[in-house]
Length: 429
Image 1: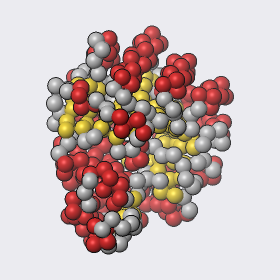
Image 2 (image 1 turned 180 degrees about the horizontal axis):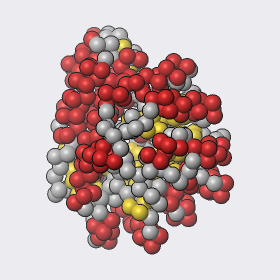
Image 3 (image 1 turned 135 degrees about the horizontal axis):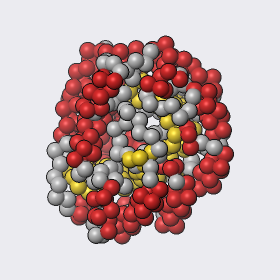
């Protein structure tokens, strides 16, 4: 299985690198939204790139927190949002990522109120760190209507946390923070990183056991996805980033969660029943990212905002969208990206594919589906002739055997994007 996962991981890595070939001359007509975007099927991602400390493994755009700079940033966020409102976008689902979105609670809650004045907001998912969790903040987030709160825990082991550069909360303090938040939101998620250099498999198994014993709604487990420079820096400071160990970590997740009654909401996310999930790319084919360093996928176009805070402000003040790179995906690239996102969500619906691409999935992804089924990574009835007549067809489902290869595929895809982020951060593009 490791060999098969490596092969399809390499293919995904090659496909992911195609996203890096971007055109700096952005045509804003790409995001001129006609009326049919009013149905709320485009998610809004909001990036808040400020943190009180910078974790050594994080590849997202982030800066050390400065209050004046952060308040100015929120003002620019509203102006960028207004540009999309002017183009006819209507967002009902919102995802706040970072960075640390809760870094200034008054600015965050004011921005959420602005969203509600402009849109019929249905669901809000928001990331934060444990150091931001306290009764006043929980009360504010509930009042703002946050449905899903995701807390970056990474580990409960103090030695592992120290290695990860996350010494602001001990393992015991993390548990107390989680107890404060549990039951206060529709979904409470905690994030873990696995296969970090020096992280022992035994300690990771203890982390999973603690999660289960605490009765938390959901956990999302991310394999280490370091960009090239991050990987080199981690190896200089700690130990070799060894992907050969990765499956041993993942096998613990499958054994302790997937085989013990937890729903695999995605290949990385395991829930007690039906819950909102972290990977919005699974549920939303189109999403618009606002903020410095955010990315968007809209109707087969891949867009990336500037990572430079100074340039972000300059473009916004000039009434220009801060997109500094874009690529129109080829039909094949877009279909394969779509397939990857649905595999991550554990299910491929041929009817949804038909609506998105106006084509039969068996015609357009015949080779890929044959490969996945041949090796037992997905299951589902063929019913090819029936499908072509428009009759309902059973969905393809990712099998247990297929879950680790799908995890590897997503890791390779995101690692490629992290390389792009690293380049844009370094050059302040």
